[in-house]
Image (cartoon, rainbow, N blue to C red; front, side):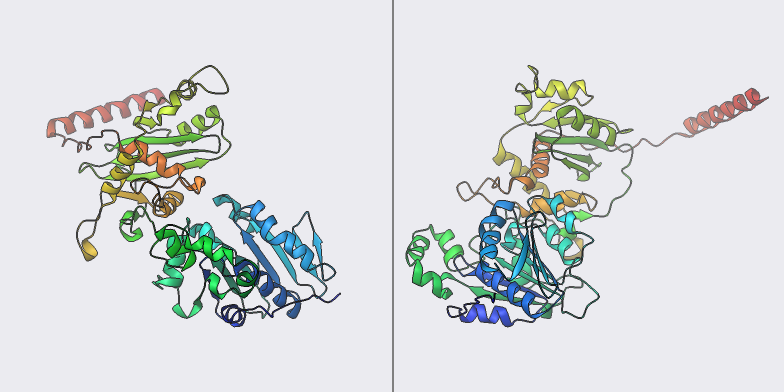
Length: 447
């Protein structure tokens, strides 16, 4: 049965989106611009026209995927493509396939790693982290001649606001990124003919929003809702290559715990009072005993001054009548109580991120090892709370745990490490004699 592709209500912006030949195309920028419809029609037409291609369509969560795309596509493609519920795929007679998926957490994106797709579509891309986007770009490949594409739709705001804005709005490219590969097609509710015809009250709803939200959601203004809390963050300054931590540097840990995620950061302090986050841990579905043992194993051989935790660790656990801190201690991880003053904690982090100097001489007191990939991704992704500008938003929740662990640590007093004392000639001589005596004892035992 032929599919009815009704394009009569298509806007000029949507036609431009359908005709674009850029490798990375981002459509939208405001609410009500017809993004989801455009994406569904685009991939359907591509699958029908080009046989044997693989298309991946993603949303952040499965309920969003089901509500916005699976239900609609099942009705729209009935008799045209075979839907397999277990695989979440639409298979066309010409061999093309549309695969539907989601990436609720960072680790979800790894299920697509190693697969090849001719086209990847990310609906509501600002709900995805830069790490997820980068991982997916490596999957757009294949040996066939079909030109590889990524299509994104989005509104301002969300965890991915900054990277989408950089690539498609301000167009500040890094490393091997090429400006000619990227195109942004801005659309608002006023471009959506179908919406204006069938739901004209939607515009009234947008008009009644607060100034900042109205500018972002109605007009597609990327500056009004930028909201990045740590605007000080610069990857070139704050993220460094790992090195061996000197033995005399003081080492600390900060944790944040919930059954959805146990997060821990390891921080070393040098002689000048500079902080180095040299290890991270973030795992979901960990009971306290398992998580504590993991953290202790990762710290084996190190002298940790203390481990700071949120105050609610001293509340009774659901698993027993003990405090959570007691269960951590029983499993080798002794905690000290931190402060739950969110404003003071975030301001302390901001202070440590402050950049001094200019040009190549820029530096900051807080540095993060590049091996701590999630913290260096999540920290600049935190958005300023709309209701309380001195605080961070708590959503998306999955990106807050590692920054929270760092925040708890930052509010406790630390002292710079003492440089190792220079040994006197007498001390060096005594150590030499002691080593020779030990070698002599071993030789004597051998015979």
